[in-house]
Image 1 (cartoon, rainbow, N blue to C red):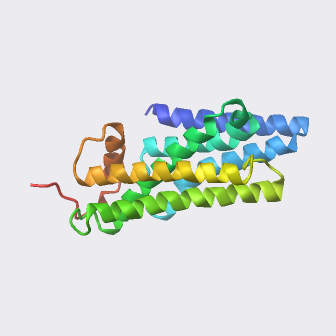
Image 2: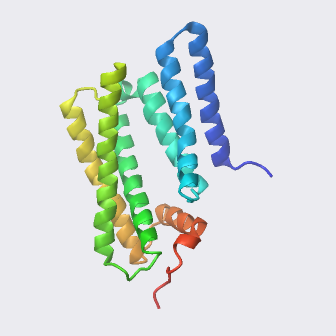
Image 3: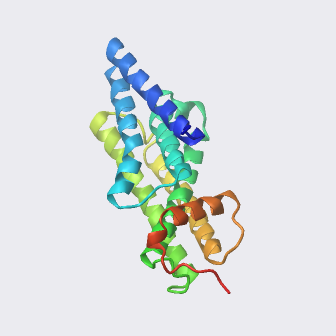
Length: 214
């Protein structure tokens, strides 16, 4: 059975990271080896973590997560994209916060077994927003830890960079929560709506009470 384009993209990213590790070892560029190895390890983590929880990640969501990890950890740090492109950090934080807001909604909706009427849509959206923003805050803690422990420069200008990122995360998480609200209202969401439907379909056993409006 031929591999999907998403699977090929993930393999390409992992192949690039393996090559970078080998190059770093040969040139004794240990900082490059550390970043590439850490990034490579993180690309395997989402699937493994989802499996531990008994959740199946659709290929589109898994690919988006891997691309984000590669773009932030490797391209952002090793290729210096954060410095070369002023908008790189903004785009990554906004899209990640929006994605985490959506995933927060789907997981919270899962706790209600897909019952559209178990709680008001706005309440589920507020919870989803909280999840998205909380993950953004945890990422800032991660950046701080990497800078302090390994001497990296993920926070750039310190407090100003952290606050800018949190503000962007707030808007992204709010948009993700809004999409969750519209999903409950059965509004058209385009591509994001299809991704959400893919996740629900792949994990139908957790959404046993999901039903359409009459």
